[in-house]
Length: 225
Image (tube, rainbow, N blue to C red; front, top):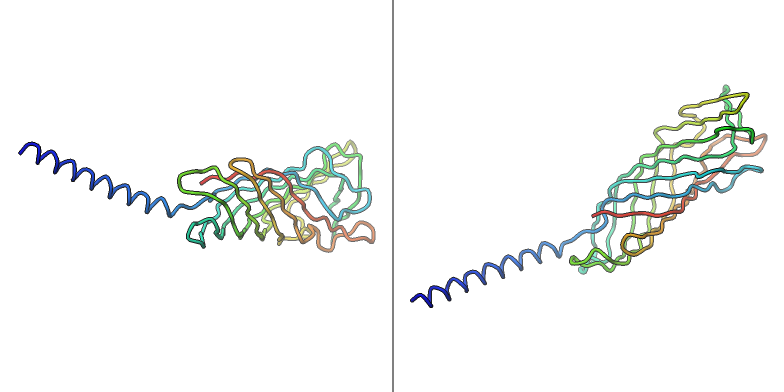
């Protein structure tokens, strides 16, 4: 009798363990990847006017959340749709003097400090490929997408021995930016690049030439589940 009771106990425990394992696998097999992100990049300005230059390190930082939505059974392909924040600190020799109706732009190398700070709310959408499984967080990934960025705050600063100018929220800086981006890597190390298709300045000019200036960010991006 004791033997029969022991066998029944073992069978019941085994059945319970097996069911729990199956349920765990069923749940874990519905994994999602890389839903939080942080990127650190160098902000290069393209299509710049003559004699324009950058100094020190013009940083770009983005962070946010991307909802991972797998579209294949093995969950290696997915679509990401998210919301984020971007901070850009551009150090350059561009002087902006407040004036009405339009600010005055010029190239001036006499600066002690000269920078443009931009804050954006971002809406990224991307197509994702990775060879991930629910048992491992180390895998190759290639994510490519397109993002829209809305400027909600900006500041231009120019300081030298003889003059100082600060402009908050200049109307001549374009509010809506957009462009493609790409991230490629393995595990923690992922390269990141973004190119802004729209110039930062709308009708602003240096002399009789358009200001333009497009962002090109290159750096690293880090993902968190």
